[in-house]
Amino acid sequence: MGASISSSDSRPPQGIVAVFGGSGFLGRRIVEHLLSSGVAVRSASRHSQRAGDAEKGQAHASSFTHVEADMRDEAQVARAVAGARAVINAVSLYSEHGDTTFERVHVVAASQLAKAARQAGAERYIHISGIGSDSRSRSKYIRARGQGEEAVGAAFTGATFVRPAVMIGKDDALLSTIARLARTLPAYPLFGHGETRLQPAFVEDVAEAVARLTIGEARIKAGPFEFAGPGVYTYRNLVLEVARLLGVQIRLVPIPFPAWYALAALCEFVPGAPLTRSQVELMQIDNVADAGRPGFDDLGIESHSLDQVIRAILEKS
Image (cartoon, rainbow, N blue to C red):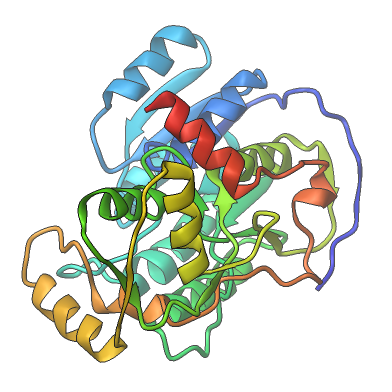
């Protein structure tokens, strides 16, 4: 599917925008962009109010509220979406634990949230998925993302789907890990030979795009949107580029994927597993935007390059 986008009224919308996962890596930035645009935001998350939420509450006393709401709890969800003009699902799960599975969060709970938003009378629903989402994939994570899109589409007609590439920025999971390992290890362990292709997107660019779609700066007739940065890198070249910008010399050591799977299987016994088999599986799959899908350019956003993001992070660190 393609997208047809035309100019629309860009005034801040009347009513509240409910952001689920509003304390997360992407969600909290979506909240900030919406607040900066004069939009009233209700941030919903499983956790009690965090320091960042409290600061937002002080800075935007009349337009920001935080509520505890687990997407798996229908009563909490119904209260969180009550009176919302738009609802955004920015909840993400990258590793399973107990009954918190990819299917439970990305399919069942996502569908329930979309249904609740429709019943509450929300005019717009934005579902954050991921590049490569495919309901027929062998990967449990990618398959759940694809099935989630299908379930949400059935529950909320006209829902907007946003598929970001792997996201980078301050406190991310990708660049921060690469930088830490490059600075501390005598040899850097690659996933396989490091040939998997990635097209990292700056998280602030993605948040701005989601905010624009929510506010109505673009009238959307189709989708989904795929948001990725301007550069495509193999994992090997990405590691080398980060090391170059850090000013460190590194030796790359290819590690076969079977060894990574074995290590991940052991890590999964550790609380808050630092590595899972699902994550290793994702490192075998290219994460690159489909050039035929609408993206940043269609919203008038000039995406930041990898160098710009890394330099900005280093300046603030």
